[in-house]
Length: 163
Image 1 (cartoon, rainbow, N blue to C red):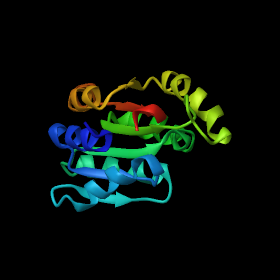
Image 2: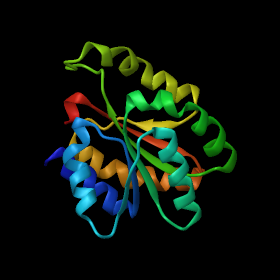
Image 3: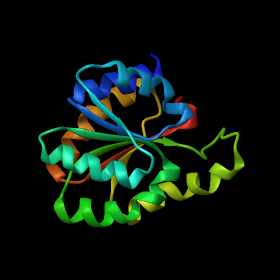
């Protein structure tokens, strides 16, 4: 099964209908699929924290939001996740291209890649780490249910080897 197709199918199965995104080479094919789907509102943004604000508004308007981003943007999002999302109990599915993992060709990605799980733990954001497309297809809809029930962000970390 193609990894991008599995993530897309998981998003659809979860009922996600509002996607905010930051560009990432690993997410490129997935972003094309989302952009072409008339049932999903896609809002590309220039900063991750901007995207989280837009997604919070979408949730208040009845949408089921997801944020597609690289893990490097997690550092840019600490304040909005620790304040807005924590205080107001907004759910969001964070589909994260986890750069800096085994096989990463760009050495500058490695420090944040190593820090990402610990940063998620510090922010008290639950996450799953699917290793195969089949596992992602199963975990994405389950993760949205948990995010919504818990009123909290939930991360899907997708390593270099996943793609």
